[in-house]
Amino acid sequence: MALSRLQKAEGIIAKQEEELRTANLKALNHIKWLASKTKLDIKSLDIFKVFAKADSETSLIDDKRKINDKFMALYETLRAKAEKSNAKKDDSVSLEDLDGLKEAITKNLMSFAGRRKSELEQNLRNYMQRSKDYQARADSEILNVMKTRAELLTLVEPSTDPIFKDLNEVLEAGYWTNPVMDGQFLYLNTASNIIITHQKKKAAMEVSVDLGKLSVRLNMRNFGLEVIPYKDNRRCQNHYHPNVSPDGGICWGNGQDRRIEWMSQLQVGKVLELLYTMLTHYSPDNPYVPIEAFNTNSAKYGRIADHIKHPDRKKKAEKKVKAEEVKADESR
Image (cartoon, rainbow, N blue to C red; front, side):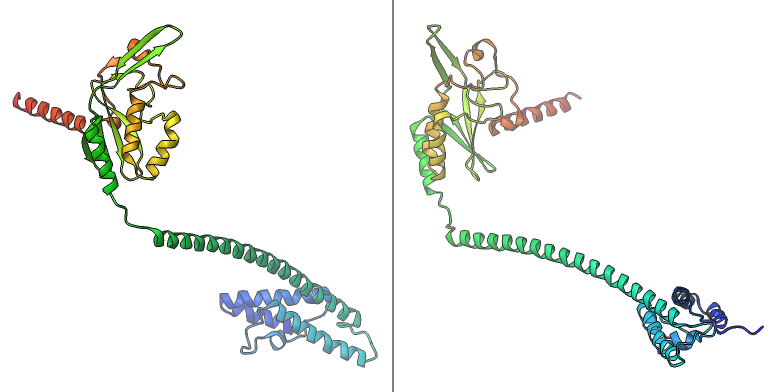
C-alpha cells in the first residue's frame, strides 16, 4: 500500500538526528493538533513543503506562531477555493471546517497574547519598584556625600594645648596625681584616700567610710570617663564607691548637664574637679549601694577584675607571675 505524504514525513523525521528530530516532532504534533481541531485532512499535504524553514528542506518551523500563520494562509487559500466552487462540500475540507480552523488559531493567538500581556505588566511593576528603591538609595548616598563634604570643609585640626593646660592646673591643685597614658586611655589617681562622711538625720548619726585611692580613666578618643579602684580599696557587691557601677560608670546626678557642656568644649579640668567633688560626697537619693553597706558588708582589698584594673597594678601582677615562674624553675 502506498504511503501517504504524512507518513512519509514521519518516516523522514524518524531518521534524523535526535535534536532535529525532537524539534520536528514538536512542530508536527502542533500541526496535527490544529488539523484535529479543524477536522482538516492533512494526509495528502506535503508537510515539509508547506511548513519547512526557509533555508532547509528537512527542518520544520519550530515557532508555533509562525506555524499558526502558515495555517492561516492555508485557511485563506482553501476558503477561496471552496467559495469558488460554490461552497460545495468536500470529503476533506469544508467552509465549516475552515471556520473551525480560524477559531482554533485565533483562540491560540489570543491565549498567547493574554499570557504575554500579564507577564509584561508584572515585569513593568517589578522594574518600576526597583527603580524607586534604587532612587531612594541613591538619594540617601548623595545626601551622605554632601554631609561628609560639608563636615570636611568645616573640620579643623584639633589643638591639644587647652587640654594639657587644664591637666597641668588639675595636677597643680593637688587633687589628682600620677598621670599615666596606656593606649587610648589617660589614668589619673586621687592624691589621697577618698573618705566619705554622711550625716543620717533620721538616725541622728554620722556614717564615715574610707574607700582608698581611686583612679579616673579618660578615653582620649571619645572623652568618656570611668572610675576604677587603685589602692587600699573597699569592695561591696563589686562596687568601689556608692555612686559608681562595677564597670566604672559614674552616676553624675545633677552634675550631668555641666559635665556634657564642659566636655563638649574640651574643658577637662572642670570635669575632673566636678568628679572629685562627687567622689568625696555621698548622694543618698539613688546610690548603687548604700554607704552603710561599705562598713557592714564589704571586704578590704580583694581581687580586682582585669577590665577595671589600673595599668600599674597590671604590671605588678605580671612581674609577680614572672618572679614566681623563675622561682619555680630554680627549685627544679
